[in-house]
Image 1 (tube, helix red, strand yellow):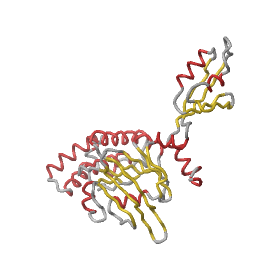
Image 2: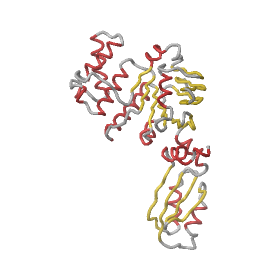
Image 3: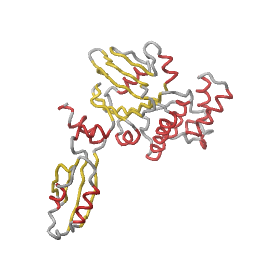
Length: 318
């Protein structure tokens, strides 16, 4: 895979304070990477170094094979940046704002108008193109901001908390658009956020960032497997009825299924920890043994569990 963003030993100090501490990270072409961490973790400082807006104290950074320290303008030509609060000329329409950005990027008035019109339709704002930006909702402003970023055909898009304050429907539309950009056009996306559910929906990989350090990085499924060992799944089972034809107890039946590591009785229900999804085997064996299933649900450890481990329950032991 082609590596678009490469950080090696990247460090930023402000006096005695270390904002980013020897960060090593690569992000591949067409990937949506989630940089996840609480406020003050160092995410925004990392983004500033990627954009060439502040210099590293130590280490190296490369974006599209360009060093932002020596060639910041070249990086800005290849990278689009969408902050959490986008500023527009509020007395001008959404379309007029995009045309202005396109002309700033060297396009003629005719070409700028054509491209702006296509992009405003693409981000779902065609019906609002001629409304003044000052009356746009938060979600509409972010979609207009994404169109503004796309004007220069970037290879990389950096989104810094882009969904703050957007209603749930608007968030869904925005995230679907991000996925399409990545998969259909091969645009690399760096998504900085502390919203766990949205990050899990959209990102191919995540990096967990706290106190300037990258504590873990990878696919959510791989991080789950690493943290929770041989039991990344928990299945909750409710059973009724009596054994027939000399069948074993439900606990004994469950323990005999390959992949089940433990069975616990909790408040009348069984919690089954397992290394793989054994829900179909559980259903078949319990029913074949003459029991009734009153409830069956599966939990796979997700980003919220991983986040809690590192940021709440596990950092002291790392």
